[in-house]
Length: 377
Image (cartoon, rainbow, N blue to C red; front, side, top):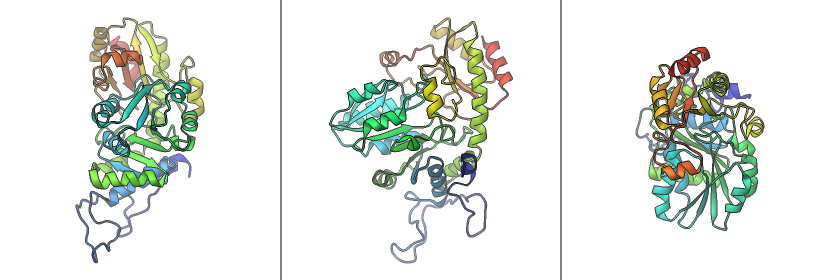
């Protein structure tokens, strides 16, 4: 199946008892067994739920993975991945990454003896130079949050070889635009809260892979740590994915127009968008992604935090809020919102200024969104 068909049908079939087209919400905590350990595939809802299974099969299909495990949030998904490591293990991570990832790595797992090294992955040689005999995992964000830098997934996977796992946070792109496993990565994770759910009404996470041994560790964390989504959360995410392709396509079309308009605006300093020809990794984006995505970041000519804050407070259609990937357009200041947990000196070293403005472009009319930004200027 082509992707647009997969988004609706991958891993899905009508519910066998009633013939329901959409998977029902199995609101139960436990399941009857014919005899001890003799059941219909489910024994306790922390371990598995049919609504969750339907979601996992759908995401696995979209990411060209054999299996997927869903979690209560993107952070819970990351937590499960990191728990597969041991004290003394070395992790190489993108230096420009989501603040919640940085917080989890440095404040939760580093104290337990996991060694993290943050490098600029736009140059694969930086990754190559960072690899040691203790490196067990390479954590990739591409496009990065919020500077929208591109990392060559295939090149990093070749550096990792067979001994080091490569994990790609595919939240910003979504599988509609980028499928890391097809490029050689071992594991892909999502905050399904964002583009997969798509309606800003549910929190969730997912880990997908075709590596059976890795998934065995993830399933162990599902059962043991229990950071799982409820059936209604799974149902809402399932429903959201059915329109993933049309939502992301429309949002991306809007983002291209807005990014070009911002690049020509006299009040704008710099625009960060892979679809612009002057973006440093524009050619890589064309090679690695099916399109350029709906996230746009920029600075003002008056590159002060006060000017940026004033600008963001004046938008009317763009809602000043955290998160991204919903049908509605959002505007945020990463330094004080999504990336506030990263120390200022670390943010600035990676190029993230306090005055940077990040847009999650939605599916409204592009003309209305531009008018909203213009009146804010």
